[in-house]
Image 1 (cartoon, rainbow, N blue to C red):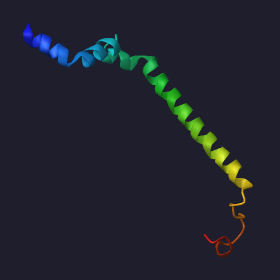
Image 2 (image 1 turned 45 degrees about the horizontal axis):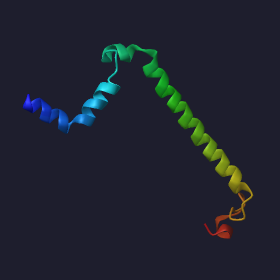
Image 3 (image 1 turned 120 degrees about the vertical axis):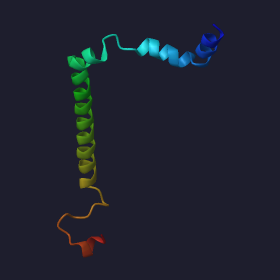
Length: 80
């Protein structure tokens, strides 16, 4: 009994997390559920949309910026 008590005292957080977050279906059953495939796809969509919004906003912000060089200007005029 002493060894179990020592183990549980040293690993209380791990044991609590395993008890709370342990999935109820088996791993094979979970792989067949739609939730496994639906949630990562939603995450992919949100990442794609947020990246696209950042790119569009950065282009819009820099179009009229005084630091922006004219698109048709040669490299010798822009210094780049």
